[in-house]
Image (cartoon, rainbow, N blue to C red; front, side):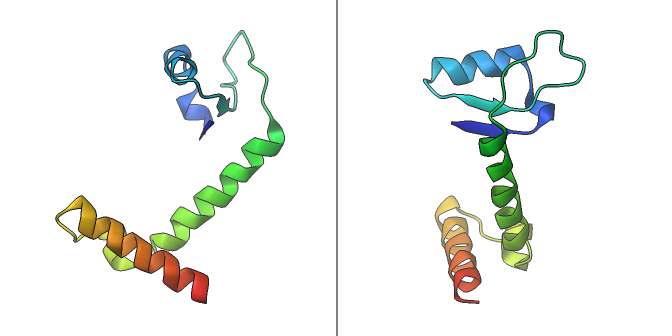
Length: 87
């Protein structure tokens, strides 16, 4: 399942997602002639993910990405997530 905002509502992206075997939970662009069905319950969970990213970006090292390697950055994000869980 791929959840995305209205800005990512494009036929090409929906085809790529379907080709990978996933389902797209993307709200329809208001100018779209052919409307795709939207599971509003699943789309509502997208808000939880957005809030998680917002909380993680409160940590300066996560927001500015001081780490030079992906492995170190992943470790910093993991530590920030642990700190958020312990609060």
